[in-house]
Amino acid sequence: MTVKRIVSEERMLLPELRDTLLSVEAARLESGEEMSYEFRKSIEHANQLTKASSEKGRALVDELLKLEKMKEEIAYRIANLMPRTRDELRAIYAKERFNLTTEELDEILDLVMTHF
Image 1 (cartoon, rainbow, N blue to C red):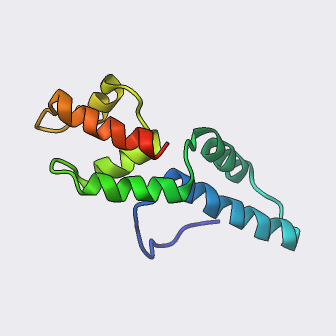
Image 2: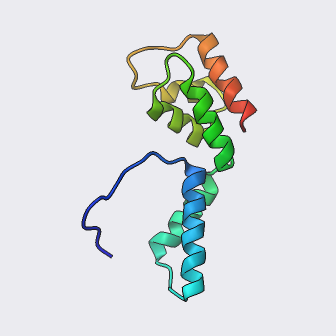
């Protein structure tokens, strides 16, 4: 299968991706189509790394976007990775030009723990 052009692009949470892949898998199994190695590995990867449901992930992104120093890209990254410690959260913010205070880090971690 060759991709000729990109029709659209949108940010997606890992749980949403897993749900989409599973629905495509179900449709392919119904039609008797064989699944490629890459597709099977994609499903396996999404299953292993997904830590929350798509509803909880989407709710977390919405809550994170309400915070002052939060970009959409970082909110999605936090929702996908679900960091549990300040160090993990600092790693997500490593490329940013600003540093978060301990209170801001704790506020984000509290949001993550309530949606985990």
